[in-house]
Length: 103
Image 1: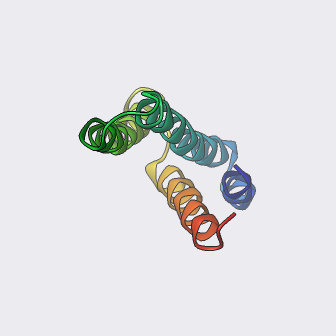
Image 2: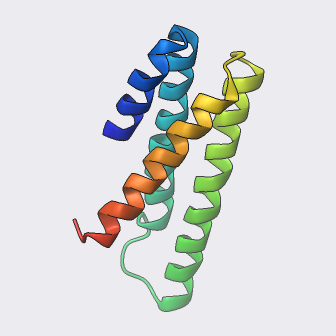
């Protein structure tokens, strides 16, 4: 969530509308990740095929929720798409970096 706040602060020069869009974009990634984890890890201990199916379903759900949240922000809320995408990319890059550093 720290990457979201940094992008939102950087977008303040353009206005509160852009900063709010950055918060929505970063929040969408966090929401999608939470939803994905609930699906992928919610089945407990199981055989390999059902566990793999849950992981794949979790990844698909993550991207569907992310795209739906970003589309909702642009279409329903009228937020600018550029700061939403910038925050989403920043949060995803932070997640990849955290995984690479094994934290």
